[in-house]
Image (cartoon, rainbow, N blue to C red; front, side, top):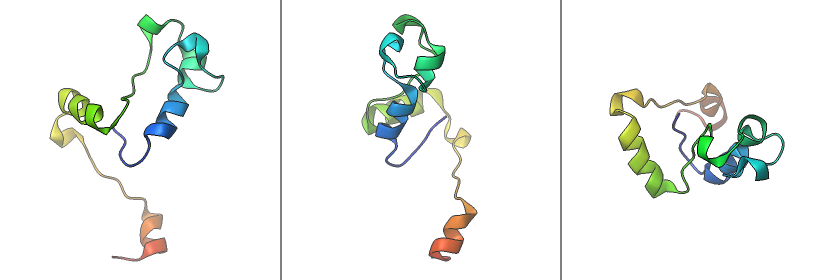
Length: 78
């Protein structure tokens, strides 16, 4: 999955600490991971590394844009 926008800080909070033993309860690693070498999820540390890995793992035609319909209602058809 590829997310865009200013989500790095929030995504890192959702995923949890790299060491699952130090991850907070409620995080993906806190609930589902056991040891660092067998992590079940990966997240980039910044936009530049994200670009590199997106190009490594995804073809351009696999990336799609999504706009919530509420955006039109709130901001108009700009």
